[in-house]
Image 1 (cartoon, rainbow, N blue to C red):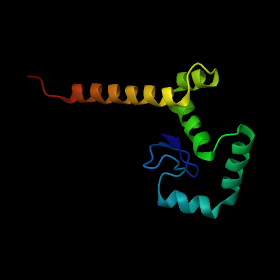
Image 2 (image 1 turned 90 degrees about the vertical axis):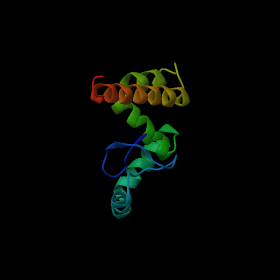
Image 3 (image 1 turned 60 degrees about the vertical axis):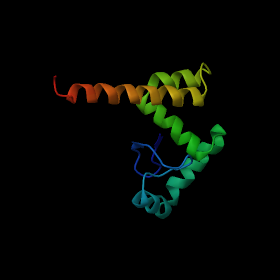
Image 4 (image 1 turned 180 degrees about the vertical axis):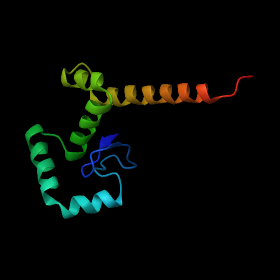
Length: 103
């Protein structure tokens, strides 16, 4: 899960270090070097890779409580990923359960 560097939407990538959600955003990022430089600057300030920075921003947007716990060093990013995955599965199960016809 990460925030696309070009359009800003929270998305899931196929690659661990993806920073854009698709080809159009990859082209947009290439055509707007100011976006890349802003990310590179934030990356240098935080000491995180651009991909890790975008992942943490996505946690802040989607799971503010997990972002706070990461920031307070209560949990690491691996534990936060697992918790986010569990929540996603639970939400999916609840949606499917509501859609299932009554027996």
